[in-house]
Length: 128
Image (cartoon, rainbow, N blue to C red; front, side, top):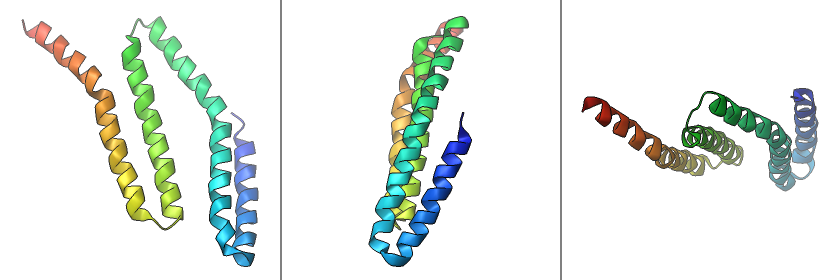
């Protein structure tokens, strides 16, 4: 991964935002959000490779694709929730960020239900 590109973009954005904050404070937040979104877009290419690798591992190990899909969704929800929460914190809206985190936990619970259901089915079959 070309992390140095992301680090340089972040540092350049930081300097720009600090300058803009001194001159026109109302433009600092849109610049912060814009820089964050650009960094996230750069990361999306790398995330595709990670997801593809997970599916290859699952195929090689003969693991159900639904379980791997659930794991990838849970990780994605977690990262997106943290990203959104941090943006809310940057905008001094901590209470909204807290609601985002609560919603992400509920979404993760719903995402994991089919895998948990299969697990209980396996346990039930083993007990018989």
